[in-house]
Length: 185
Image: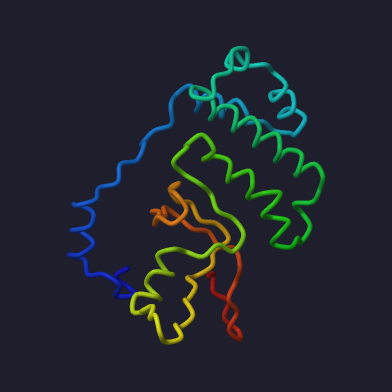
């Protein structure tokens, strides 16, 4: 933000003080131990570990064990992708969206106030900024609304249809190419 001169150091400090973001600093020990159980040397060993029925699976409660279930499902899905050989091939962006990123998207499924938007969704903050001076007149032809930057993934809060929702993160996989220089979007 400083490099692009979007904010001064003082403004950044003020934002951090007024809106502190609290992160979970450590993974819960039981979840970390479960994940470490998948530290295997082969897909055969991973499959053996995946087939072990865990205590949390006997009386599954999504409020308690969603993360464990997500880890197991995601590792199983990635093992299948790896074994198929398709990860070694050059694929289209849509293939990655449906086979790889969809596994990541589901990590937020247990948080009812968040939603993951896929498929070239317009960033709401960018849309609002581009249309700030747009006035809707009743007699004159109104100018077309500008669309915000389109992203492959937006993580935002769940809101009724016409309310503005806070956006917490975006993702984009495309590249911008300019002669000999390739830049990540």
